Image 1 (cartoon, each protein chain N blue to C red):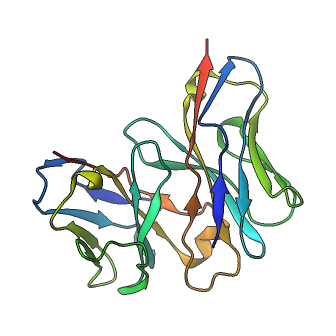
Image 2: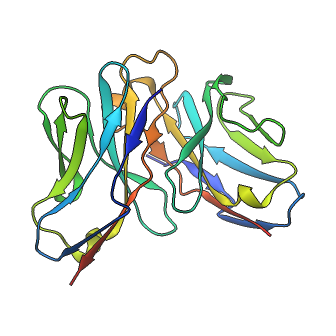
Amino acid sequence: AQSVAQPEDQVNVAEGNPLTVKCTYSVSGNPYLFWYVQYPNRGLQFLLKYITGDNLVKGSYGFEAEFNKSQTSFHLKKPSALVSDSALYFCAVRPISSGSARQLTFGSGTQLTVLP
Amino acid sequence: EAGVAQSPRYKIIEKRQSVAFWCNPISGHATLYWYQQILGQGPKLLIQFQNNGVVDDSQLPKDRFSAERLKGVDSTLKIQPAKLEDSAVYLCASSFIREVRSHGYTFGSGTRLTVV
């Protein structure tokens, strides 16, 4: 069974500083990896994904993530944080070879707070 | 493109009452998921449909939860009778088979259930 760990419940960063939200995963075979963001009282919004190819993937709103197979990690990064980036961030994984069962497994989430 | 529609947005019921949630996926999306998101946790899959058939319901508490997707389009999720621990946001998501390679899954805004 696949699993995702987000070791930090809360990340605080000053506006303009770089941010990192950590994610490690466990899956049989190769993974599809995703980051989603959730604002209060809203559904999950897609940020970026890793499917195959370049280990550094770029997504919406200036976010990027680096896939590291040896460390089974997929950390979310942004060079310069904005106050509007404050939200709840979820990492999710799905094995590539999962037949018809294509469900995502989510981490527990990391609350990002960007301080002005 | 219209998103995934869910209703109602909010519902408050007493324990032991019944409740139903409705989801209308993106047109053409064959796969539909129901997730339960308890406050402070990541979404957990309850059930996955492929067209009108169930692919995975291993985490659905079948003694009280039921779901159907009779015509392979809309879906309803029912809880009867509700317990206090069912208080959560219920998220519906849909995907087209190939879309996992583009942006994963599209989520609705969710239904926030409070059981008192």
